View 1 (cartoon, rainbow, N blue to C red):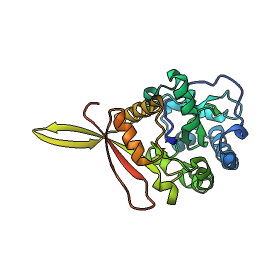
View 2 (view 1 turned 90 degrees about the vertical axis):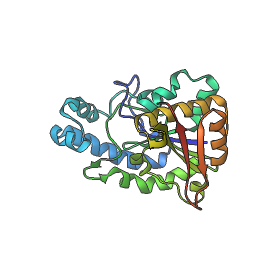
View 3 (view 1 turned 180 degrees about the vertical axis):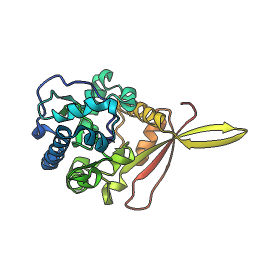
View 4 (view 1 turned 90 degrees about the horizontal axis):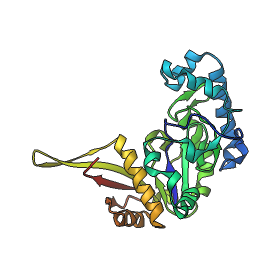
Length: 264
């Protein structure tokens, strides 16, 4: 199973070791694209800081993030699994996974990024700020910039097993499974079900979407389940006491799994 994760805006403040080595990251075929994005980001952040804040979508209070980006080439790095600290990662709790579950996480989890493309949780990268949805001069929109190199690199990483796609829309734009890979890919949507004036209603959740995805991924890793298909994944989640609704898609499209929660 390969699990595709979004990054998080929340990150560790500093690295703790040697600086970035682009050649050490997973998917070495992406090195040239990583170099181009990194060069463009560093150049932007070493120039007009007000312009950099605007491009990166940051407030004046986050000017320090611009200064940090300017030093990415020499900044201390740390494993991606320790870098990201947002809601999904808090609920996943990589730091205290049991050894067997941690081994499965290191083998299966891949984090998408506007700066790096995709990294394993063991890949060492420095703290940075670069959303996948921005337009970075002179490269343009990062989603479009990454699409071709990711399309060439990702199928090999996906192998012939299940792909569990937990990414948000900005990072799903970097690579879209197609053809045979799409048929064994499952996306997850979290729905909140509640009764209002005697009527059962459902709504898509946002913040708690991330929390639920973190919890369900942790339970999958701890259970030792090795689902090979989206249908087996739905069964594994039900075994973990999640309410899951699944419908087989049309040919060449991912499965869509709805995880229904009654409490947030």
